[in-house]
Each structure stands twice: as C-alpha cells, then as structure tokens.
Amino acid sequence: MNYTKKILSVLMAASMTLPAFACNKDSSKPESTAANTQPAESLEIKTDENKGIQMDLEFKEIENVANNSETEPVATVAVGTDGSLYVQKTDINKQLVTQENGSAATELYTGTTLATKVPNPEYTPDYKTYFSMWLDTTKKADFVFDGEFLVYKIKISEDAQDGVYPIQIYKDDVSNYDGKTLKIVSNPGYICINSDEPTPSHNTDGDLVLNGSVVSGKPGDTVDFVLKTEKNPGFVGFRLWMSFDANIFKITRASAGKDFETTAGLNGRTVD
Image (tube, rainbow, N blue to C red; front, side):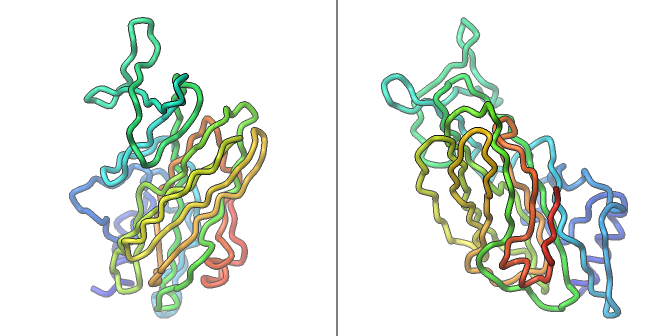
C-alpha cells in the first residue's frame, strides 16, 4: 500500500477523532490519549486531483501528560541549605513520600539530566501537554529544511518563583513520504526565571534532531520558545507532544518557525 492510500485508510477509520497518519514507533505501546481529544470534523483536510492530502498546522493544549518510558520523568530539584540539590522522594507507584509532619520527604539529587530547579522543596509542577500536528503529501516529496521549526509564545506567570523549568517533546510521530516513521531525538529546552541558564544536552543520534531553546525571563514577561530541526532528512507530517509546567507558563500563541513556514508555504499559520 502506498503512503497516500495508507493515510486515507487511517483518516476513514478515525472519522471521529484526531487522525494518526503514521505508525507508532513501538506498536506495543498504547497511543497517547492526547491524540483522541479533538474531533476530526474540526480539522481542515484537503485533497488534490492526485489524491494528495493536506492538513493545516494545528495546535491544542491537553490537560494530562502521558507516560513515555523512553523519557526520564522530570524531577523537581531544590537547593538545600548546604548548597546541594535535593529531589522529592517517590514510592514504587511514583507517589510523593511525605514525612510525619506532612511535608515532602527529600533525598540528595544525583541525576544529570532533565530537572526543574527551584528553591522551594515543597514545589510540585503541574505538567500539561501542548500538542501539534501537520500533514502535506500534495508535493509528493519530503519537506527538507533545518532551522526554526515551531515557535511558542509563552507568558510567564506574575507569581512564578525563580528557577529553571524544562520544556520537552516527550512523544513524537514523524513520517516521510515513503511512510517511514523517523527516529527522533529531542533535546529539551529551558525557560530560566532570574536564574543562570544551563548548558543544554545535544544528542544527535537519530534521523531527525529537535532542539529546544534556552530562554531567560522574569515573572510577567512573554518570551519566545523556539524548537529547531537539525540533520533533517525531510518529512511530510508530524504529531508532537510537548510538556510544560502550567503553574509557571501559559502558551498564548504557536506558529510555524520561519524555516518551516518558508519550506512548507504555511503563510504565517498561528493559533492564539
């Protein structure tokens, strides 16, 4: 079955839900509930005379972040009075462990990866998902570009406490015109509130690399968080799930970055 026919069959099967246009990278994993929150009739799906399919760039905020075993959970790390970093203890069910007085139990943080760093050891993030998708097979070829991919305008809460807050793509589904699901490496970005900027990780061991930006701001500021592509072999469609701390941020606008917009001819598609 060629790629266009495969997409059409999936769209027909998913007439009441957001269509999944490429195979999940691991068929043993359940699909995220994030993909089932928007009715298909709200999406504009176009076809051309050669049965090419075009779906506009779409964005949607989703309440719950799905689990993804390939991504280390985001830890909340606090600076102790001794200057060391401490993380909240969790039990076997990943529930926070509390002390007799009801406060959170902590332990020395020895991790070197993604973490929210705040001064308050009692802080608990409220993680939500920002979902994006797009598809265009009318060109009958892949869209190849590197540089600015997606741009998110983010409002920092007026009462946000100082700290370093990660934003990451924790689940992805990106496909080329031949129907191959690309292996994606996603390096998280950070928004730093009155805090030193960390050195971001830079793993490139994938077909396509997505790099989040590192941005500084103050409570009340609005900043641009940019997702960039690197070593992009080309694709015709994607679904991305990005986690962010809703206690601290509100995404007020999302749009195609200049390099993606130019390559795909999206003409400034944004969502407020």
